[in-house]
Length: 277
Image: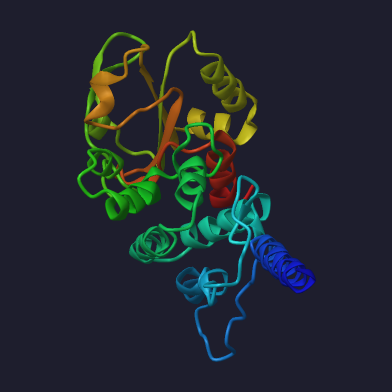
């Protein structure tokens, strides 16, 4: 009987040790593994866009990396989000937009099985209040994860680098105008909003307080096209995919989209960089 009790005691100890070991192995945390750029690489940004997630995804099987509401494969969600924002910054500053599309499509393919990875991407790229929103990039991710989603075609409306779709509008004097009829300006700002919208009022105040923009508007180097939009955005869904107001576009003088649904500070900074003041 004593021998049997010893066996049960040893067995319980083994099972406890195994369970505790399993619990420990499922709680492994780590810092985000940044990639080291090889010395022979000539374009660091392009290399990083392609290989940014290699270290994070490498050799994860059986490592017990913690994955819960606060961790993603052992990396804290806060750190993962910071690295994702770094990734987006790299993509948006590539010389070729097609390279950026390929980089985010690769993200959607490779990180599809990582819990929360696509949610982070949606939050940063598609939330109307995100300062990093870029529905061109988000649309390419959705094209990978759910190709039949109508959102893919909507996000691909008026992409950066394309000529914006023409439309007819009424100016402040009630005269009929068209976007393509705006000629002679270096840049065109198209602002979709309405006078009752608090955020629209904030943009108007920011524009009015920016001395350089006021000079450019006065000289005609920049033209501001105000498009009143009510709460029903359906009229614009199939033309500009306006999801929320305000929504601001920056075009060049040939109506080529330079910035799409961009934050106000980003637009103003771009103009200051162009004009050197």
